[in-house]
Length: 325
Ligand code: BTN
Image (cartoon, rainbow, N blue to C red; front, side, top):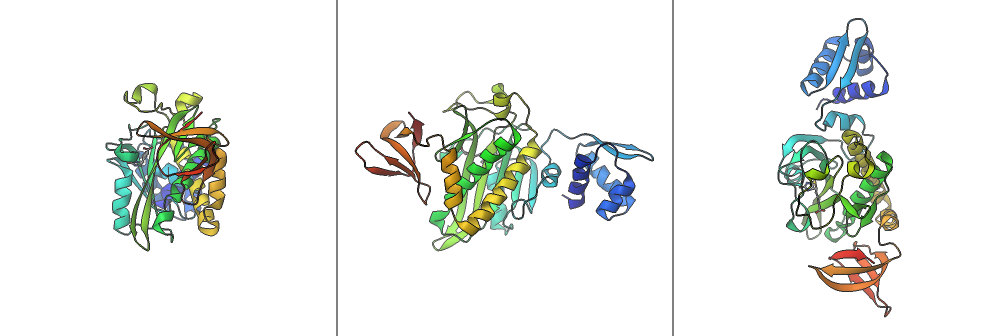
């Protein structure tokens, strides 16, 4: 993707009406011929751009496919998204990001796609990933932390997605431990971290983020274990996918910068505030068997769930399904 193309889209977004070729060439510091080539490239990617002599260019419509130029044009991050890879269709962005990271992709590389044919969920499950409706992306991070601290990074993604939902819709999401995003008790987003590490450090972590944005009821598989939803189904309004993606990535960038400077504390505090179990009694089950119940106290430094049972014993839970009573 050419960075100048992102600048053209940003100008189309901020300037009302036609933008003259002269203004574009002045803002971008390139010739009118170069502008014409960028406009042609945008048209080839599905943008409908009107060109009127002596008035200039006007954006009529954007393509349906989530477009990396649109996402890049709205990024104001320092690390996340400084390199953006886009695939119209792929098997799994997590697998792509893993491969790119193994080949030296810089920290902050984002892999974005319009649809996945083999989206991966937690515990070996499939993540339903129809094209043209949702957000599927994976982020490469290379923090100087120990491997046991890596799960903390999933909590950053959860908070970033929660903030993005609040910033782009009128909905208030809740986080369900370990890292599901819920609206009205139904799952709207899922997160999958993968890591390459040595005993004494991390090579890289992949944050995989899937958010159901404009999925319609008929697009959900029949065999879902838990009820699921999309932002469209909950709010009745279609989500602007590039806007959502860039908002989420900008928030993730802020959280990550904060994490590197101040550690896990601030994100843990925000995560707990947003957790659906906050101050409530919960039951944890593993493979369908109820095993522990108690008052939700919070999460510890490794992201494990802390509960206090009626006999005042504190329990530390590292896996299972949490149900709020
Ligand atoms: C879950 O089971 O809740 C986790 C789902 C994670 C899905 C996302 S979509 C983008 C990225 N690529 C994948 O293959 N999975 C993650």
